[in-house]
Length: 293
Length: 274
Image (cartoon, rainbow over all chains, first blue to last red; front, side, top):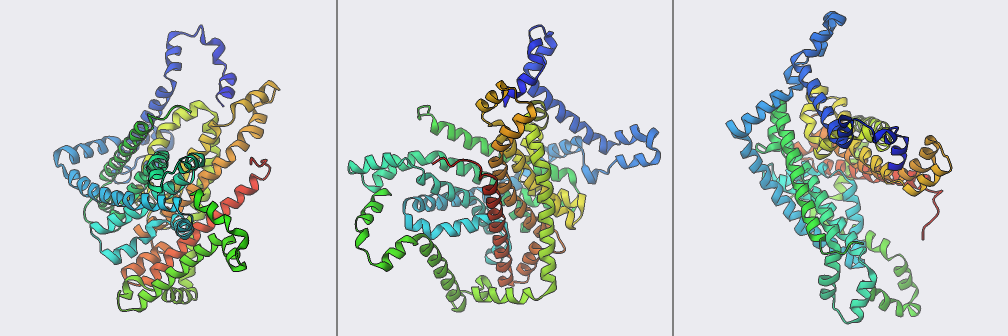
């Protein structure tokens, strides 16, 4: 595709004699255009709340221009959100308690999902008959929006920590199990054949061939699970919880504290990005020994 | 894995007819068998005094609840409303995300401009935005349509875009050396190559859309299947909750099966590789 674009671009011919400024722009086009759009977006947003656009449009639209100014409870604004974030993180520090509470549920749920999903998937991948037994269940569960189980979970374990751990577990376990299953299935059959003709037992096969070749899949599953778990944190807390970032978002929403909602959303974004990046790092690290294909 | 299979095969020809029948349909038989055993266990557990039926209900109770609900008009209203939320939100997401994904994949500058927004939205579980969406759209149908739309639009967009990006550069070079126009290159190379990616995105998006329906209705709603589940949960009607979960399960399976069928239809022209 790159071909199609560059040759349709009139620039290349002129690039040699382009002025320095243009060359600078072309070298950093991606960063410049991206930043520009983000700044424009933030300005448009700020303007909606402060009434810049209403003022600018008044000469043309008259009284109808008032529609271009929105109440802070409706959209908040970047500066309000930033101020609110500063207050919540560094002045009152109220968000740290929520973060700790959410983090606890998340870690427990994800750990349980890894502890159950990996062996389940690996076993299903290795034993054909076992896979026949569990595959329909996994497929059905995977097609279900797992959050629909939430009211059931609340009946079973109440609205405390248990509910959140269970819903996070339920959301995260499927990608892990399914990837582990696929990982064993795609192990190079020749390697297994060679090893077993030299008398390697099941355990040996597993440890020296299956596990190393499954690792990328397992980590990819973990990466998916990390994101799914985030959904679990939010939904579990929105539905019935007194503390945690999701509960904070939901309560702030109910009180029309839009700036606090945005702070919560951004906190979740940051947590998600950081966690996924950590898994990516691990993936790269684990893959370092592999000779390039 | 391969060793037991070959050992088994050595005795193949001398096996009796039932054994051979079993082996030919082993996958189906074991799968169905497990399901039946699980359902029976569940039923037994529900009928025994070991576990409070309030907790786990039982398959027959759920079936009864289904039979009763099926005759109530409210239930069908719930189904219709959830269906409308799904179709409107998902339809809008597909209608916007596929063309936009193609455009973003084709035009580098557009990608630079939209990239930060798409990446950020992709990093948020979109259900987090629910409280905001409720402030903006109220608790009626449209807040759910918005959440479904937001859930589905990102995976479709990202997959379509990466489909365009991975089109075979050699094909494009060949076509261009034979003076194919941009439109021709697009319609005969880029678009067909992108179809599998679009369908992957649509399947992901369908899952996210269903999630949106459920969470949106659990959070704030006046009708719909999620509302039904939440209501039943609050009044400890475990059988109705299970019924709702199974309906969502069926919906998920059906949507994925439909998309698979569509994909096969669009991919029929492709020569088999193996």
